[in-house]
Length: 198
Length: 168
Image 1 (spheres, rainbow over the protein chains, first blue to last red):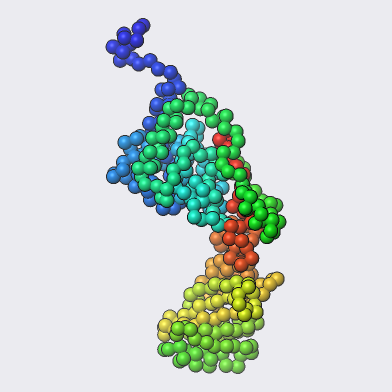
Image 2 (image 1 turned 90 degrees about the vertical axis):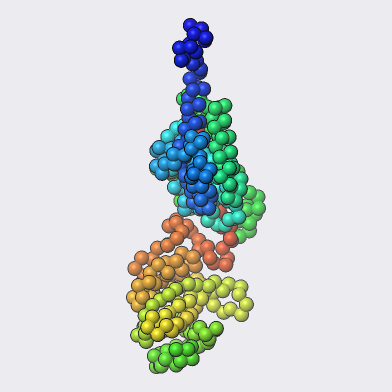
């Protein structure tokens, strides 16, 4: 059957990967992990003025098992990080992560003992959105960017994620921090480490 | 009642108690500094004198503070809800084992506030019904509002496993 015939019959030939990517990219269900003022911009993005549903990702779900896009909006403190990791592990494949705003990307101005200096140190992040907080247009731009990333790199069985085996964020300590900690006190690395998989 | 009248009233209520007391006034707030040893007896008398509400319990770390003798200052804010008069009671504790008697027997509102002081300064409250951390995680090993604790911490914020994309 030639392509001309099939088009006239209402059929359209494509690759399975491309079809899966097209449907996945245009119906992203976000998990709003909103912990601070970025969450207000996230709500504004999905509300009527900026209307995220034009891009197919307005269905915010508060259960991670129904989501495939995590939007970390706001600062994450060390008490919240195990929760973030557990929620990320509970999301079904294929899934993506947007780190929204300066705090989620780098800790922002909160360079203190309790605030995690960027969620990408502990979970994999696909798209970073700068800003404090970013405007809804920036978040929409990041979702369009993620849609094009999915359409370029996605596979039907989501095998592209298996190659990302190394941590993608910065190292645990920078040199300043090591010097400061060594001057002050030996590092208390005998603290119990929380393992979200148990 | 102004602060001078309140002072007369509370001085009368505390008459006969042992322990050094010093009174002062700052911007019409009456302040009383007492010994750690006479805390329970003083507070019991003040509770009986009409100060029926404990507004706040907090602490100050006086490490390297000019002309300070003691390490920690614990501050109790008391209020008489009928007359509207207030009193600030201060006492001091020191390392290595900063311990104070609990005020939960006199005011139930001391419960969480004393837990917060323990959480941030490591001052223990003897007889507290639930002596656990209030805000920080249980496994946190330091007391972050002490002046010898660095503001960026000792690495607690990095002490988590990394979840890579292939294993998640």
